[in-house]
Amino acid sequence: MTRQNFQEDRQRRRRRWQAHISAQRKSGLSRAAYCKEHNLSYHAATYWNRKLSLPEQEQTNLVPVRFSSNIEINPAQTARSGLKVILPNKIAIEVGDDFSTVTLKKLLTALEMN
Image 1 (cartoon, rainbow, N blue to C red):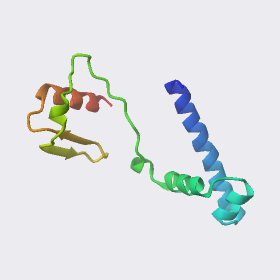
Image 2: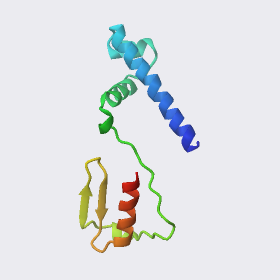
Image 3: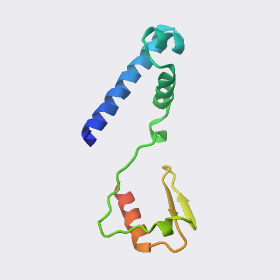
């Protein structure tokens, strides 16, 4: 599945569940009764109700980050974390005791561009 197809499919699911949640609220039925009547998963309806009720800034969106091919990640460096930075938009960065400042600068630059 291409990235565009995945995003379109996600948007379709989101619109479908938004329609069901709105219809359930207008129907006066409980969520369980509405799900049973429309052959929907109660747990999925609960998930989407919660997800669609969150303010936009609280929803997590993944942002692709591209690095040049000359970056190498050493598993030994990532095994232990000497520093952890958690940014307000829920991005966490952990760096080991002997991290590469060049790699960290590239990561921060990529994050600033998004």
